[in-house]
Image 1 (cartoon, rainbow, N blue to C red):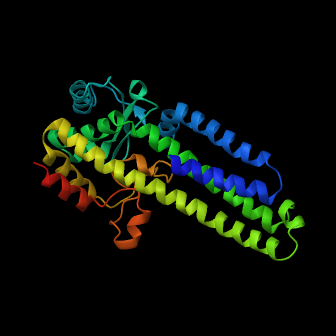
Image 2 (cartoon, one colour):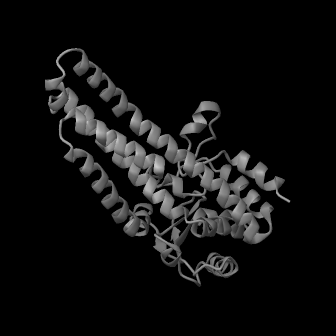
Length: 282
């Protein structure tokens, strides 16, 4: 979080110098804080709406409902609201601004292919996200990445279409050219760096939720077996979105895990790696 704010402040400082207007830096800071608060407060409603989720009926989805209820008691968490997505792709996520306003959601595809022990492993994973306060972290990170990307795009457009003047007017010649080149490089690299930080945080929190979930059920094999089944399904979810992909227990776009440098741009750790770690737990 400190690194994200440092990127925003540095970027805002550079843009304010380039345009010769110190108020731009203040706007950067205030706007990012306002966006953080607004998205955090309404994050559950936004995510549920984007995912086309509906409130789960206890009688219709009895195993899901009771698994969430029992494991919430074990974890010492308030009972979250339970939602279901009509989708054959097996997946699940947790959202909400805090543990008192949390939501656990599963797809109908997940409920069809998992047995009770495997389902408990997945629910324990999602409850661990709630207990570890990952929803707060992921929401703030997403907003900051979006903010950096938007401002970067605005800055590049203004440079190429004649929007800025301050530094360029004062720095005729070499200094002006250096400032322009530095601005272009910074505007291009800032959103990429921000996105890589977001993805790295997302992958790390998935590993943490896996281990916390295994500790909650005292049976790592349940989640390992569930991940094995989920990873074999390659088709994407009907309403998969880049904005919410990191929230799900598995990549909602389907496909095979990437290797090498491509792993930097993954929202989730490879399923094989997660399964190996879970089965290595004693």
